[in-house]
Length: 269
Image 1 (cartoon, rainbow, N blue to C red):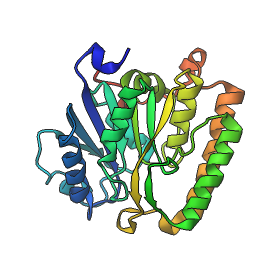
Image 2: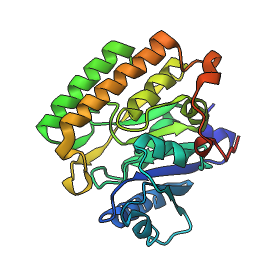
Image 3: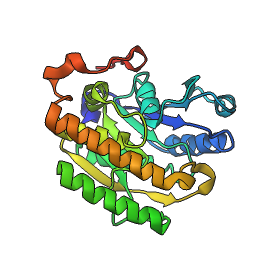
C-alpha cells in the first residue's frame, strides 16, 4: 500500500554540508523554492559536517520555520552527516540532496513522485536515466561508468548510477538500514543501496535529474584520484562485510557499531 494512503505524507530533506560557506545560502534557497512547489508539507534539516568555517552561521541566515540547522565540531563525512540528519527527521518520506549547486533541486519533486507512483522502496537520481540532462566532465563519466560495472559485478545491484547526491527513501527503509551502516564518507551511497537490497528492499527505481557540474560547490575535483581509490577500497570492505562476515544481518546486531548521535529520536510510525 502506498504511503499517501496510510497517513498524511510529510517530507524530510537532509542537506549534508561541509565547507560550503560561500554557497550554502543560495543552495538552501533553491531547495526551499523547489519544495514549496510540491503538494506536501516538509522540513529541511541542514547538517553542518564540521564547524570549521562559516557554513553553520550562513545557513542560519536563511530564515524559515521549515529549515533546521544542526551540526557538530569535527568533520565525519557525508554518510555520517546524512545519518545524523535522518535520525532527527520526522517525515514518512526521507530524502537527501547534496548542498552544492550541481543538482537542480526541482528533481526532488520528481523523485518523490516516482516513489509514490511505483510504490518503490528507494528512488535514486541517475545521470544515466534517458530523461536526465547532464553536463559532466569526461573523466568523471569514465570513473562513474567503471565504478558501476564494478558494483554490479560484486553485488548484482542493477542500478545504473549509485553516486548522485539525491535519493528518496520510505521511512521504514531508513530506520531498518541506517543503523547497520559503517561507511562515513564517499562510499556511503553504495553501502546504503547494497544493504537495503540485501535486506529485501529490492524496489529501487532510477529517476531523471538535471546536473550541471558546478566547480564552485565541488571540493573533490582536485582529489579525484584519491576519491576513487578510497571509494573502491570502501566498496571492497562492504563486500567483505556483506558476503563473508554477514555483518549487516539481524543475527549480528550485537556487533553493529552503536552511536547515540545516530539513534533515531523521532518515530512517526
